[in-house]
Length: 324
Image (cartoon, rainbow, N blue to C red):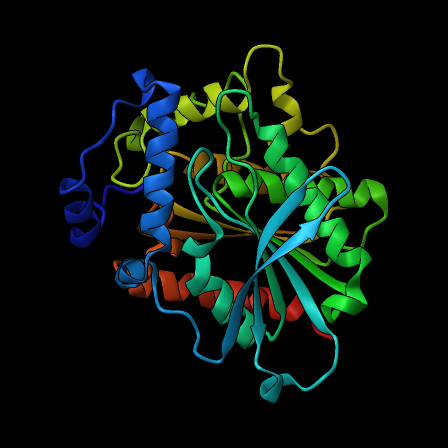
C-alpha cells in the first residue's frame, strides 16, 4: 500500500482548513458547506490548485432538457481550427465528491483531454447526495446525460460509435454503472476510465485494509466516507444497485482503465474492481500511482508530476479506444 506521506503542499493545504465534524453536521450546515465549497472550487483563484485549462479548448455550461428535469453539463470542445467540422468522439465525464463537488473542479483534465484527443467532453453536474437524495439520483443523471447526448449526436457534433465514460471517485461508480447499463441497452461504449473509484457502497464498503491504513488522509477521510455511505444508501435503499463491484455480471463491458493512488482509503476498492472485471472477462488495465493521494488528478497544481503522468495514461488509453 505504500508508506509515503502525501506531498507537503497537500498537507499544508489541509492544515490551514478546518475539518468539519462530518458525522454530527446538521443538514442545513451541510448545505451551506456544500455551496461555499463548490464556489471555492469554481473560483479562478483555485486554478493554482486545480490547474489551468487548455487554452485551445472552449468551455461552456449547457442545459440538457430531460423529460422530468433539466440537467446542467459543462462542455469542453477543441477549437474548430484544430479539428475542422468532422464529428468527434464523446467522453462523458462524472466528477467526484459525493455530497460536494462541481464539474468545474475538473476543468484541467477535461479541457486537456478535449484538446489532445481531440474529443467533445461533457461533464455532468449531477445531483449530489444529501438527505432525501440518494446515490441512485447521481447514477440516473449520468446515465440520462449519456443517452441524451448520444441520442442527439448530430447536434452535439459527436460520433455515437466512439463514446467513452470517465468517472472520478463517487463519479467512478456513476460511470461504472453506466457502462453496465450501456451493455444491457445495446448502447455502444468503447472505453471506461475510473480514477480513484468508489465502487462499493454496501455494508463492506469500509472494511478494506486501505481504509484503515489511509483513513485520515488529507484529501479523503473515513469520516467523510461514512457520511457518504449514510447519505448515498439510506435505510431501504439498494446498496448493490450503486455498487458496481457487486454487480451480478461484469462481463462484456467496455475495456477499462482503473487509476489508483496508493495513499487513498479507496485504493483497495479500485484494485478489487480491476480484478473483478478481469475475472469476468472484461479487459481492465490497472495503473497504480505510488505516493499519490485521493483526488490527485484534481490537484495538478499541488502534485504536477503525478497528475500529468495520470493524464498522459488516460489520454493514451482513450486515444487508442476512440480512434476512428
